[in-house]
Length: 271
Image (tube, rainbow, N blue to C red; front, side, top):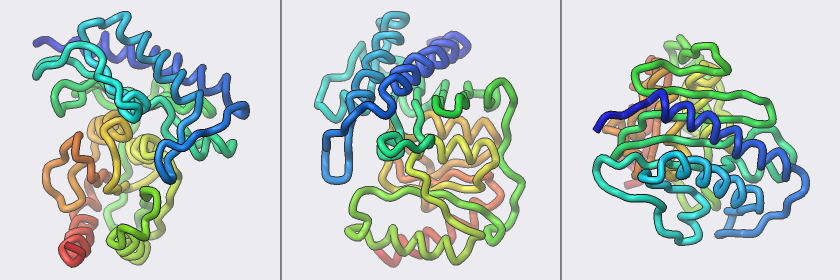
């Protein structure tokens, strides 16, 4: 199967702005309902996903579509499926809590995948009009300028970012990891949007990101951005990353092994 990455990328860029327009229109006017303890959804999420889905499948009716809100509602995956099928993996609003509280740290995340390979990734932050995008073997870009991961070599000088699932006390190893990385690095931040965390690693704003609780729609686009910006992505223990089992470590590559060593020690102890 021939992948027309340029065509997929343009569609993803346009779809991200379609979704972003929905989010901006509803910003400050929506209320949330709870999907699960600590996990909320808004009318903006649902309408943004539907707008993105409609836009993409009108252009590519043979493609599959996996969106966070549809998956949460138990909807069947749209489009044909098969080992060579392009699947759009979409989070229409990553950073819902930030969005509800008027913070600018929220984004639309869109990826075109084939199997577990991400071919195209777009992350759009509509509040700041930052558009991150990448296509496999074509580099990573922010608003038309090529971006690269940082050049920090030592973990002690690195600025890291992470996220926690609801009720992290039920996962004590996450608190151990956080404490260990706080001790070993310059600092660790928690922004509340995995998509932006990964985009910021790709842009060199952070040196590393780790998480153990993500879904494919949270990280598919961001993983490609980091890789195309010169970074490295694995599971936390350093083994091969799997998009559909995303425990994830994404770094500039230079501090990767140092972070893996700490993670292995804690995960081995907690296991």
